[in-house]
Figure 1: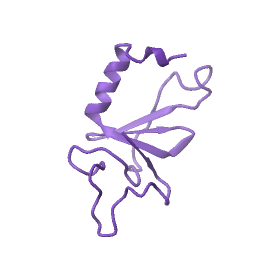
Figure 2: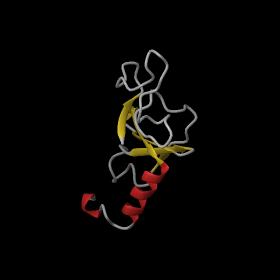
Figure 3: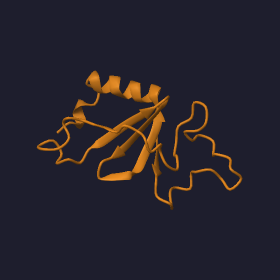
Figure 4: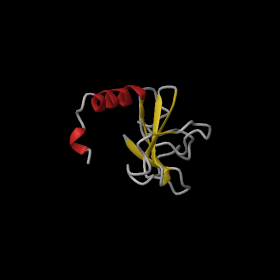
Length: 105
């Protein structure tokens, strides 16, 4: 996964001056990477464990559109990580199987 910034300065990983998108970015078939700005109409989901005693409201939010999954931090929504649905599904299955339990406080 690659972190992208939605700010005007960005990471430089947007379309080039020729209008071509760099290899490995979300717009390429099967690719993941930085995008200039995710679609504005995304339905961002937040865990019910976010807020209160589970992190004080600072959380990871996720949204999907087609084969693309977007992740961002609620306190820094301008920074977005982009991946494929297949990679996201594999990660979630690992979480469900307990493979990341050592990261839970």
